[in-house]
Length: 354
Image (cartoon, rainbow, N blue to C red; front, side, top):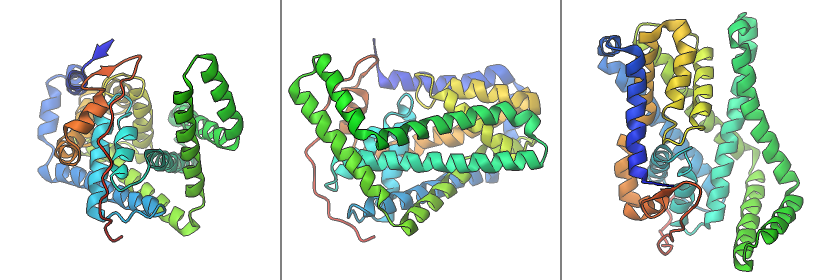
């Protein structure tokens, strides 16, 4: 089944707006009209600051490979990657764009993908630490009665992938040989097996190199990661305040984590549908239908639509049609298969001072 990526994005944008409007009705417009322009500017500014923190994280990660990215270029790469995440189902475009952009500096794509994986592992470690803090705070504030199952599900969504990743790294040789035997039984050609083996080895060697970073560098990366996510996951909290209601920051944090997990189950870019429905179900019992749907629309504009608006020109400037076709599989997203598109020849870009 073939679906054009542009059409899929259009459906996603429509769903992201229609679900809250259908649930909230005309009251949504009245509440959104009360949001002050200064509040909207604050929320958008929080996202921009978060992007800059992520750019600093990219600079620290890539410096371990000798890449001297300046803040401006690193910021452009982050914004372009976020755009790719938002326009592809389950955010899969990020794993294509991130290493592709770094390859313009001579970094092998397998190493760029390892940096992207390490970046996500750092994200998961932050969420696990934040979840522990939320749990302790909820117990102290006697809020555990309405955060119990939410905390349990969220913890499972974090612990299980981290545990699987740790087991994969620790048992890489066994997994590597087992995968090779499986590919042989499936009739995969020797050339494909060799390429996959070479890229897999390079990927895991890169992960081990990242594990060898100094403690100070890793601490700085984690600090920048924490700052970014604290800003990003405060947007819903302030959006609810902007429409005249309030909930605890803890609960807003949990709502966003569960909503993002639900969004990963949909085939629509940006997690549309799953995010709106799940966040509505979690917020409406506490702040009412109109306030919940209004806050969701504001939150999604800042963390989804704004990413597309700001990211599109940056993405077009850095890559244009070439990378868009790579994302879409020659302008077509093929479900159940994958089209291979070759990136243009690697260019050597003069390194910028760190």
